[in-house]
Image (cartoon, rainbow, N blue to C red):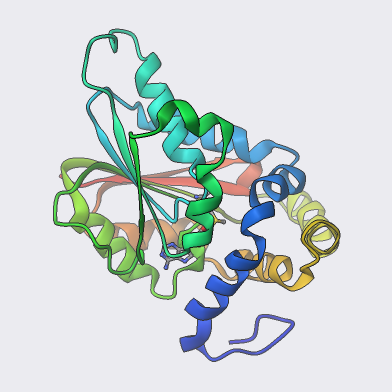
Length: 251
Ligand code: SAM
């Protein structure tokens, strides 16, 4: 596969991805804010909003990185009307990269959630959890990095309880030509430049841009989710399709 700046064999993708996130882990949260102008926070808030977290539920956040989605889920479950006095929601953060999980433990906003988030290293394609482990499964900006997307979707189905919800937030494809043009200019110029300035690693951010372009379109990805067994699959475009939330139910 060509990633634009260097050529790697498909089997090397997992190693490349691990290297990418090792190299950016400590600056990861800062880069997300800089690259998206803070908009990723809004997208993640929409994701947790749609999930409607409840007290007592267990979330499995795969490719969870430093823990934005898990923290949002728990905070939202806590502030739900009638939550007081009920058993709190809990979360498992699973990521293939230990450095990303570790970088999340020192975040100020994690202090109050300590003990309710378990961090586990593991691969989305073959999760180290039993069948029916979680009430909800989320993956935000993670599935694009997985070598075998269909395998990851099948394993998402396996680890959900019947009645459980799958939700994926991922970069997608702008829905208008104008948006696509603005987006191309930004992603091919600004993002690698920012990567170089902030993390001294232009290549990792070049990889990010390439991987977004390669990711299936909204409809094609929805079909993959259906093929993994999920019901009532739908998607919602965010910021004109720059990102999308795909969801489905395990019935
Ligand atoms: N979900 C977090 C967020 O939205 O801020 C982190 C997203 S980050 C762009 C992608 C994460 O996916 C990285 O932490 C990386 O280590 C992880 N990752 C990549 N391939 C993975 C795999 N096969 N299984 C689990 N995690 C993976």
